[in-house]
Image (cartoon, rainbow, N blue to C red; front, side, top):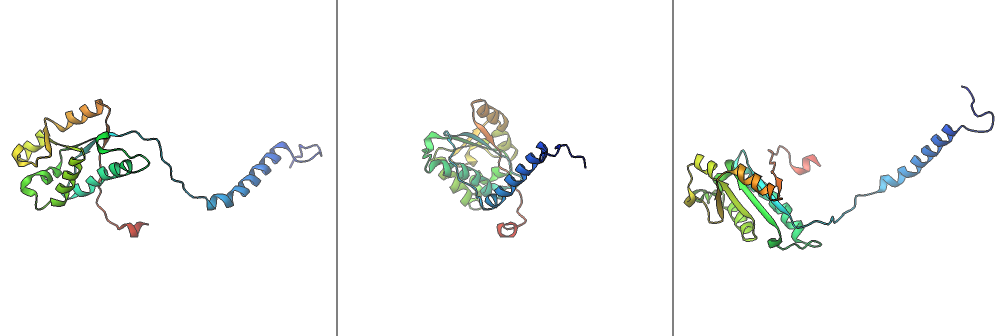
Length: 182
């Protein structure tokens, strides 16, 4: 190895490397004991349009949790947004359409009552007329909190153009319990 120090001590590179190594070694014990911290970002009342297009009506209950996951944290402190401060629309146009048909109430009662509760808070539930037609449904087939719109796509575009954020719930099949994957 060639000595570039001319006999006056370590080279600049060696000194930088030694300082970096010592700094890293000093930080390691502290980072091992560090923990996450909670924050409260300065959120504004949300403007959201949900795109419900599920491949199985049984997933409607899980999709509705996406609404709860938005409403609950924002209605509690430190935000304390009243429901009327939030603009939340849900556009329904997949197989979950059957959950809002009156004739299926007995089968989807829990989901319908959750939607009715959210509707009382100001959440608007909109059914695509094109999808309803495919299922041979007419207005009288739906619960009173449902609004029928000409097309899911035009409705989604409209609300996005009005500044609403698009949320599309993803509801995968669960193959493991939470305890299995922790």
